Image (cartoon, rainbow, N blue to C red):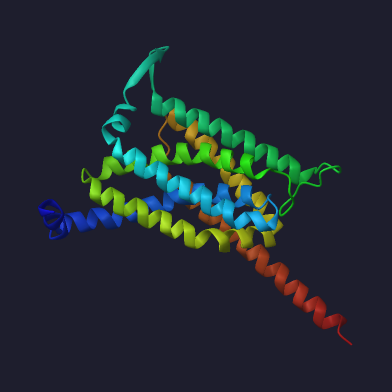
Length: 250
């Protein structure tokens, strides 16, 4: 209790908390995009529950990893070398997660461009079982959670600050999950853009796993720019539809 009171009266701790909350929310965007795209493939009556379960698993994983923080930090220690390059368990997890994202995003892009007639898999269609969706969400939750916790460890040594930041970030994800999923489902071109984001994120995870650090600012700036361009395209399409409706109105 005394340590918590000391943290509460320390301006540095508040600054670290604010920075870490922002960082955790930004890092959670990747996870949320994946969850939104994946759950939109479920029947409508299961989508909300799948999103809640997926995000709940992310919270449980991150709090569980915080409880074993000493072990998580040890994951950054090399366990073997290849051509003089050391690989840690964190590197292997990031590489595996990146490959999974590349496979999943590429498969979804192929499905969107050339859907199979017999399944009709698409956004809002039941092309995926509930259990399979939760399983895939759990895999990516693990990858993003480990990356998130290691980032938190690098920013502060106080576990209570990490817990508050993680819980806050997950709460933001819970609030944003349904609106983001509805927006993606209502705008098919955004689906392709989001899948492109997942490919970029997957390549970034693989690069990080091989020791090539990619500043997150570059990634999110590119994503924000692409989203801005797509927003202008959506506005232009809406204006054209409105003008066409005005012209054809008797």
